[in-house]
Image 1: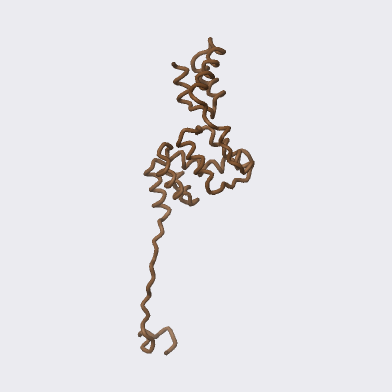
Image 2: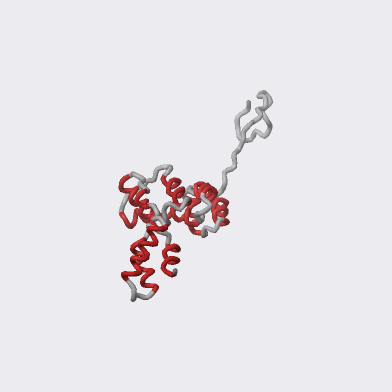
Length: 184
C-alpha cells in the first residue's frame, strides 16, 4: 500500500468487507415532547419531561391509567420531586414502583389527588409507602362528617361551609362529592 493523503484509488490487495450493521433510530426529544403534547400536556412540561427522560414513563402510565389525566401524571412525575426538594428541603429519590403503586390506587379511586403530595413527602422521609392512612372515606362516613359540619355551621354561607368541609376532609374524600353532599 502507498501511504499518503493523495491516494485516490481503492486498495487492490485487500478484499472488500461488507459492513453489516443495524442502526437503531432514537426518538428525538422534539418527537417525544410532541407525543406528550397530543395527550394534552402543556409544551413546557412536555419538553421538561422529554429532557428528564420521563416521557416514556408518562406515556406508559397514561395508557395504563385511563381514569387519571395525562397532565396530572406528568405534573406528579416532573414537578412533585422538585417541589418536595424546595419546600420540604428533603433529598428526593423514588424507587421504581412507587409512582405505579400510587397511580394504581388513584386510578381505582382508593386515594385522592390531593393526598399525593403528602404521600410522596411521607415516602421521602420514611422510605415506606403506606397508603392506608390516605384511603378515601366511605360514602356513609363522608355523609356523617358533612352532616356534622353542616350542624356546627348552620348560619354560615354555603361557600364558607364548603371551605370548612374541604379543609377538614382534605385528602379523605373527593372534593366533588363533598360539594354535592353539601348542596344536597
